Image 1 (cartoon, one colour):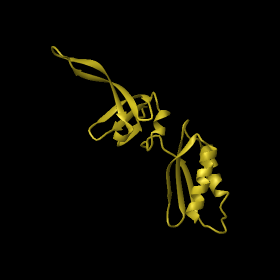
Image 2 (cartoon, rainbow, N blue to C red):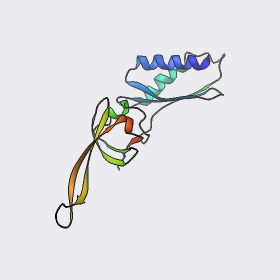
Image 3 (cartoon, one colour):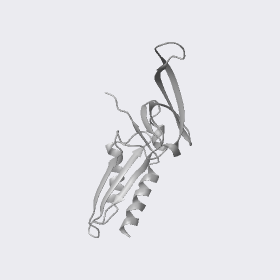
Image 4 (cartoon, rainbow, N blue to C red):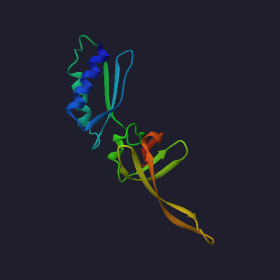
Length: 153
């Protein structure tokens, strides 16, 4: 009953703010609620406050004892859904598949896949030494085991 109420309030908040979307939702046996959100243009503290208030202000504290934590997906967090890739076009990602790990610049996303581009040093076809080669690869969302932004300082 309480779980359904919380989910309903969360869904209403996300319907009102179409730019925000749910990454994870957990509720423990002692009513500790944890909500992780992301947004098409990032997540601000005000966005977290909006979702928190949408839930907390509509539940009677006299009837239910609970704790509520609303947070954004961290900068170094893995992506959980295709929608998260779109806002990161132009950034460097590390993408793991069953067969390889690729670090490259995200140059495009579609409903089915992403495109990564990077430079690689490879042996010259003839003679000694190496040459820099531009690489490009499309990776289907279904093949991605883990993807995250590489943060460079």
